[in-house]
Length: 249
Image (cartoon, rainbow, N blue to C red; front, side, top):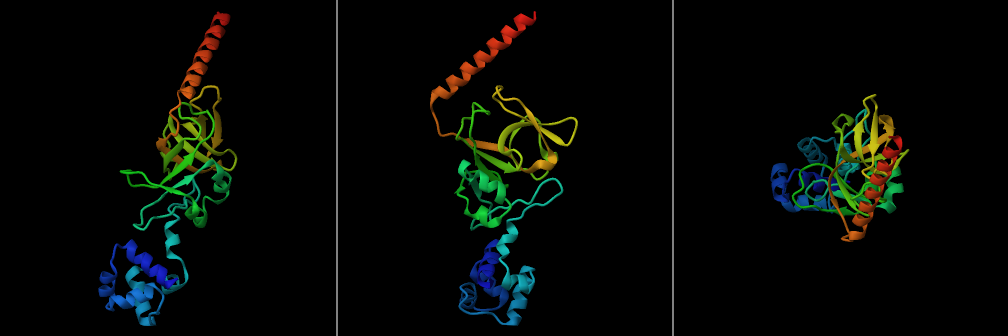
């Protein structure tokens, strides 16, 4: 792993081959040969490299150091998050479409699985860790089925805000997009659909594997029929509520 690790660490520290070779006091061509694994450094140079990058020699030569950047958090609330990074060491935005949902629930913590997910890019997005999820169904109208929800990662459940929308990942419920409120009784979230035909339900904190807050969404339809259908449903709901109110009176 030495060649790949040297190249990765050099780019992570935003160093050119010339800059690193001068720091290590060796020809640039020699450093290039190390990175291409055409030659190997002696033990003295390995020690100098390990000290400079603050890693131990065994890690430098035997482990894929880039995998260290996949695990960005681990705490008592939520699980390990695996991410992938681009050539500039910035987080990619991985896309989890509906076909990948079942696999994601089993492998979201696996760096190799995350690396293989398709990637999308957004201009001028703030720094952070993002993921995109394709949603299905009409529970969150007017955001229609097939839309892609781009979310930022929530590290702690204490950061969840009432009446904001989130992608919640759990083994029990799968991957759902809902409006959220913290249950005043504690240790649970109330998941609410914007489409009032769907009833709210609760999920306990311990069942939540990941939670992602809405940042933006991409829609692929300009069809007015969905909006007209939603408006018809709302009118029908109002009519039923008014009828019920009249009967009660």
